[in-house]
View (spheres, helix red, strand yellow):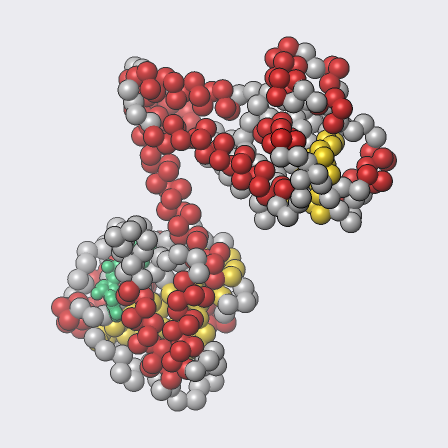
Length: 423
Ligand SMILES: NC(=O)c1ccc[n+]([C@@H]2O[C@H](COP(=O)([O-])OP(=O)(O)OC[C@H]3O[C@@H](n4cnc5c(N)ncnc54)[C@H](O)[C@@H]3O)[C@@H](O)[C@H]2O)c1
């Protein structure tokens, strides 16, 4: 393939080198005259293991050249890959100026293309917020073409390389995520990555665009969390190294997909209590753990969000069925259950609430469980329904589904609000 790369910085250059290695022809386009001159001399403007050798090979074999202007160079190009920077703007958002400018240049050049068998694939690799393709880039192309262009295919493909191992990462990425306008695969992109073995996801633009934000924020969160634990350990004369070894050895609950699905708030007898106690310990020792300190507040904000989701569009007085009250299925533990909190909010807002939780028998509750549930939901006994057969005739306005199995209740005609997994 013939590939044009816009922006030959860390991402653009390392991609160029790997594409040359794969036998493709690459042209690099960059506003920086010095970068263009160095590349044409077979030199790399940045250091990355193995990079300069591949760039020199590309230049020597006439498969790599660099320019400052596009002119008519897109004529026989199969893919234009955009890797320009998206640095922080003063307000913290990404500065999208370079993306807008390079898109305008490509859009203008694409209006001058001779008729072609396949559309020019314009693939964005820069990190940018969800909606950038739909609300910024596509309109730039539409404006130049006087409508949706039929000779251009827009694609978003986030980059997961790490500097210093970028060439290795290109051939062994953690995943390949491709966003397209209709969520269907792009034949050109499939061909480009045919030789790479990695989990693949073809999704809509917005899911692909947010991937990198989510990944990088999670990586940053992990570092901040680990360091906060490290600070507490140090202040408490605990070996942070040993704690780390124990923590990462648990691939069942700690380093695993568990506790990562967007859905219900956390609750129960352990998580809120122990997070509060660790925060107390941290404050006492002066460890200043801002991430840990924010966890309970974040969970409270989520409970409010769930209440708004559950009652969205319902007038006070409407009859709501809450499917599940204990903090999880197959348990009758109500201590700090987020669903007890939700039930209280629904009642306080004036809705006609009923609860379905067949594992729960109020007269069997004892100890703290009994005290907590009646202190927070004194009406519990009268709200709990005991007969599944009677549910069908009760005319609910909505079922708030804390368990994810509300469909099995046989209330097909009722609106089901899933709160155990945000869709
Ligand atoms: N560096 C990484 O490790 C990494 C990893 C994944 C994703 N990303 C993302 O990829 C994007 C690029 O990152 P980078 O580190 O390669 O940036 P970089 O600053 O090294 O390179 C960007 C290049 O774009 C050029 N440029 C700017 N405007 C241009 C225009 N109108 N036409 C042509 N070239 C233009 C600049 O001269 C520069 O050479 C960013 O959005 C970044 O967040 C970076």
